[in-house]
Length: 327
Image (cartoon, rainbow, N blue to C red):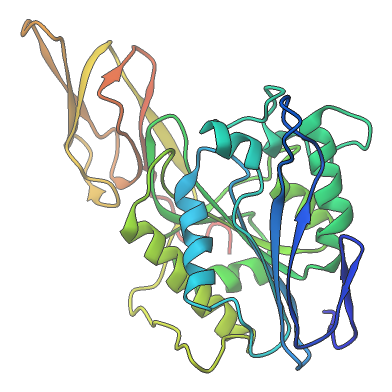
């Protein structure tokens, strides 16, 4: 682990211990020639410690993640007792401006890492994050939300068989921790290749702010920082008696027909096989079909779209397997 007692250099600027700085990444302009500046908010303690990155907005429409990092900043949780905290509330400013998941070139930024100096716009941006930001980072929590009207219960995602990440997930203590593989081209995958210990937080849905989910993210961040002896003494980590529930295996329930979708609001709940999760109806009062749980498990994602088509993913349900399978 690096102990940044010496000046820290990011984006070509040197920041001594004990100082605060907001830097701006300027990779490209809009087609109107307007500059888009991506703020990188840096707070350094005079005491040695790790460098932690809180990031959000890799997908421009996942505003709930942005809200988590905004709260961390406004509540001054990002002013560390030791070490350095970097906040990037909106990485994909291009998508954020347009309320879009993708970059203007149509690419998903979270699928093009590590990027290329001379590639597409998204690829160039990914390249600069890898080159300028990740080399100084020890730990990262990257905040996301569900896409396409699908609401995620608050959850941390980590790869299996990594004892350090499991320990951090236990400390963050989101309601659920989901084991999931790294996706090729993702920021999480790139961070791990640079030896950054990264937790991916999912909660809420796109183009929406859910205060409860956001607060869970903030509280998890305080516990995370406290475990690294970085939480400012003005703050106290909020303890939760209930440990995170690990999800080892899960599957999607898909709509068997098209129609109007009525969700029974069971997100985060444990259901039994055969329980009714919701209903699909037609707009003319001709039919009503129940959507039932295929097995016992927790509802970790629910589709909040009022209209669904046959084959649409509408519920993500955990599957019960022995808890020691991957220990």
